[in-house]
Image 1 (tube, chains in turn orange, brown):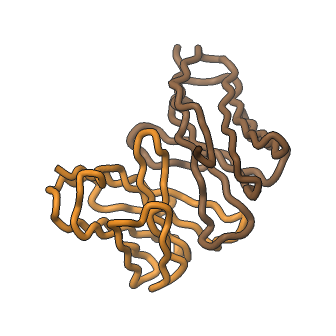
Image 2 (tube, chains in turn blue, brown):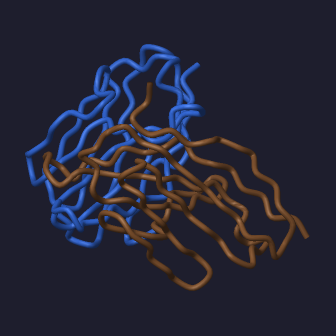
Length: 114
Length: 113
């Protein structure tokens, strides 16, 4: 998985609780991404980062926030989890963000919100 | 209508068959096209990457892009049970911040002995 780890790998939580997912990379890549994967929707971009403290919204950012204080770590926070946020979350990294740049994915975190 | 359409399958074929997987898209700005393979409960892994129209071959895999028809294909020759996975197409334009990819929903493939 291209030097990408995600933690936790599985989590069950209750509606209304805060949840933080962590992505850690050892590739020193500039760009990091958070996606969610749901049946019938494929992979959808939540937020991405193009450098330390530089982040931007993706297609489905409502209810999520992110932070990147170090090159290697990208955190995704659900401030108050809802059942609609039950999903599999993938982190991805890429080097330059240019046209030929490719994204490499982590192993995923399976989140269940009861 | 989604920007990228992909038949979800499942597609079941016998070992040794030629498999054809396809995606159509509506955004003419897409210039880069990728195929990812995703095994059950794993992250997607990049399989093929092509720029603009044309073919690209890598072993048993051939990626084909027809920009005039907004249609991309992945062919798998001599399919093996180990090819059983979900195949995701992805694409992006030249401009636009963050290297954003637009994915199809994935086609589930099963290669049977």
